[in-house]
Each structure stands twice: as structure tokens, then as C-alpha cells.
Image 1 (tube, one colour):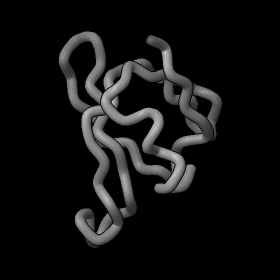
Image 2: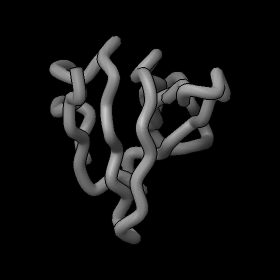
Image 3: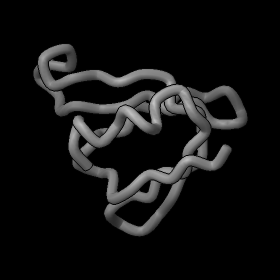
Length: 68
């Protein structure tokens, strides 16, 4: 997934499907650009229903879907 594709999903409850076929559901809290996340890759922060925060690298994400 590319950075310019993220805007419609920001601050929404989404389902993220990873390149390996697994999926995760949560709230898209923030985006970390490559410049802000140096030396790591661009990523998003996703908070699940248990209030756990995960950093997901864009290179791991196949697609995202807005749930509600």
C-alpha cells in the first residue's frame, strides 16, 4: 500500500489485510511517514478492540477496508 492511498481510511474503523493473507481490525489512529519513522519504513498505528496499539508497516499491508 502507498502513502497517498491512506487518507480515506484515517480516523476510521478498518480491516487491514496483510500480504500473507491474515487480517486485523481496529481504529486507524495515525500515520508515520518515512521521514518521521527513520530508519524504519512508513507505517500506520492501529488500535484494536482491546485497546492495544500496533504499528503496521505499509509494505506488510495488501489492502484496507472501511468497516463503519
